[in-house]
Length: 236
Image 1 (spheres, rainbow, N blue to C red):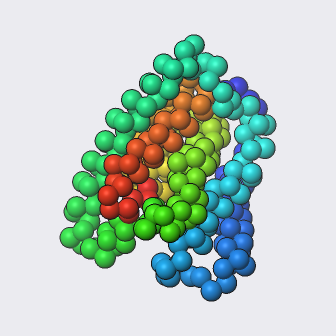
Image 2 (image 1 turned 60 degrees about the vertical axis):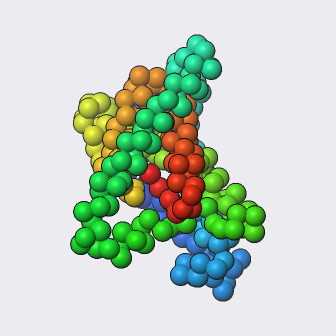
């Protein structure tokens, strides 16, 4: 486990998230003053909003991560980089299958009670059609979903929070709590909880964020490929 005396306060993380939301919203509003989230005819502002949020939050989290001494390299994960990547992809394939399965199990009963809510959840755009026309928006959306998003979420949940709470409560309780929060904040809470708990175990085993980030990114990329036909999956 990463050894460090540095502890980031919870209110500071919430402040970083709030500031990132406000800053990204202000920037998008200044560039596209005519745009609103209800106007789906202009996808570039929506995609820019997500990418900017993660990039700004990443800038906020880099200093706490460095002070906490949380490694991003693969030095403890494997001596063979090809084996490391292969193991990560296999883990991601397994997790995306679990995530997709639990997503349907979660949404099916919910659709009977709140059909409009379920419809809005599954129709949030990730890839905008026609793809050639909106390639700028699609590039930003994939950047946020597959690259920057996984990096930021792993730094926050498995890096800062899991490391901090493990020293207070022990590994098992810290993994459960961080995975629970991770699940609540995602599209499919059950699948995301399982996903987060597995990545917590991976972080404990490797003492590095390299594999969790790689698995998270591969999982999101596979989710995009598996659901490419309807072009509607935002999160798994």
